[in-house]
Length: 172
Picture 1 (cartoon, rainbow, N blue to C red):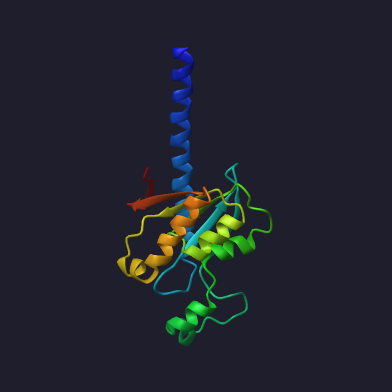
Picture 2: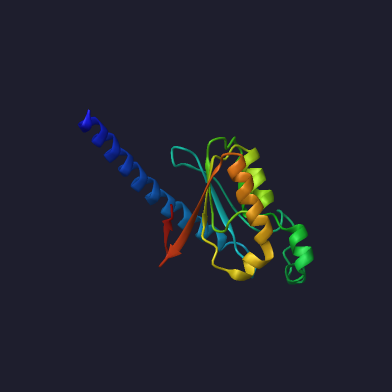
C-alpha cells in the first residue's frame, strides 16, 4: 500500500513539473503574441490551449479587423478604450471552436469583463503573469479584483505567474 501511495505521489509530482514546463512555454508565447499589439502603453497577449496542449487560438489587444489604428485614435485614451478588443476577446473570437475545458494564458491579469467572457465560454483555468506595472494596477485595479472574485465564484482556477529572466515561474 505504501509503495502504491509513493508511486502515485511521484507521478503527481512529475505531472506538476510537466504542467509548469508547458505553462512556461505558453506564457512565453503569449508574451511574443503581445508584441504584435500597436498599443504603446500596454501590450497584452492571450493563448487558449486545450487539454492536449494544442493551441486553439491566439489574441492580442487591438482594434477590430479593417479599422485603422491611427496615432490620433491610439493617443486618445477614451477613444482607444472604446475601440480596442482585449487579447482575451480576440482569442475567443478567433477560436472557431468550443473552448470548454481549455486553459487561457494571458500576459496580464484579465479584467472583470474578459474574465466573465472566459468563464462563460467554459475556460477552466486562467494563468496570467504577475502584475508588476503599478500604472496598470492603478488603471485597472478594481476590475482585476472583481475578475479574480468572478473566477473564484465560478470555480475557475486563476494562477498568477512571474517572469524572471524571460522564463515564467508559476507561483502556488
